[in-house]
Amino acid sequence: MLFRLIIGGLIGAGLGAIMGYFGQCSSGACPLTSTWWRGAIYGGSMGLLIAGSFLK
Image 1: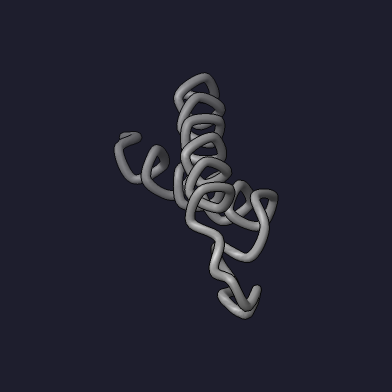
Image 2: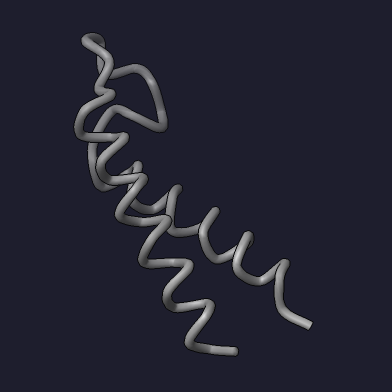
């Protein structure tokens, strides 16, 4: 159970960091993709929520 949450969070954080790094907006005003670490935090949170929704 805990393993699934950790894996979901890590996958989400990795994908979020990639999206934040490569999807940066030029003005920096986009809250999700302004920096890679904000994308990682958001992606990790979403990964935890999605992984948690599949637990019984």
